[in-house]
Image (tube, rainbow, N blue to C red; front, side, top):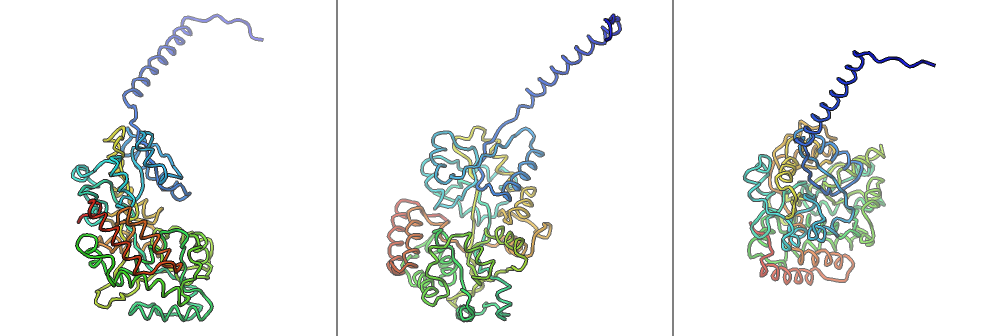
Length: 441
């Protein structure tokens, strides 16, 4: 055991110096912390899947590198659509949230004064200034921009390449709609269901209808309803719904489609039980996952030719499938605006493409991204910046969309005629116009 050792003056001074240095360092650290106190933005993202978590981790890391004084606090709410209005009203909600911004989703929040108009931010923020005008227009309510549009998407016909190859199908039906019906007949005769549809989700019949109404009425004809004196009870609107009924009557779309959910249809499509699936590019991430899990599965997509031969060129259903909004009670408006602007930046864009397989409505070059074949093909179309047609449900007011979704299910189940449904839509549309709830050009 060591005995007691005498402390020399030199040792004492060393000790005092060390303590003094530590105190000084502590003071400097405390001062630095005080000077660099972070501002916080509470953000509610839309999804929490492993891919979404990776994407948001990458985006928030890139944001932190560019904006070290602002912390993004992500909070996933699985029931966001059900609680967002109450949360914003009670001041327990987010500063910024990710959710569809077109009228059918956003109108109730706008009417209640729960979100902030961003017209000034569009004038001053560098990335918001680059948003395609047509995309910004899709989110305008009562003449103002209440959010930032995101996720440019379109609705093609996806097809299982393995099924087509096994059945000897070498040409896609791009010349006429009758050619498509003939293709469906050939596929059915081979014992494969031509079309899958996840009808348990009310939105899926709407996706199919949107594609068909773009083929009967066209983008410009539909805009006459949205912005002009066009009517819902016109023949082209009714014909598109009749075409859904025709697909069911011919056995190209199963009668139990309303009982099918999304995971089952995706699995059935990948397994070859369905040869085709009319859904949107938001499904690309799931289809790529199916391709990774099943080496025998491969897919691509095509666009149906117009039913109304007077229509020119492809009439592509699509538009905006998501967006970002700032709460009217955001604690730090400037920090929230910086965050929402960054989400449209080139740095964020690359992550959107490569992780989420979707795109912001701003200029970009898909050649600079690392993407699988079909997502790259989709991004190349979006990159042109051209205005797409419409996914009907996202651009009509909340009161109309309920009649729209419920009516399509009624038509598919044989409980409602397309003509009666169109009449009901027109009644609700006139109410919305009288209340000033329709979108403005």
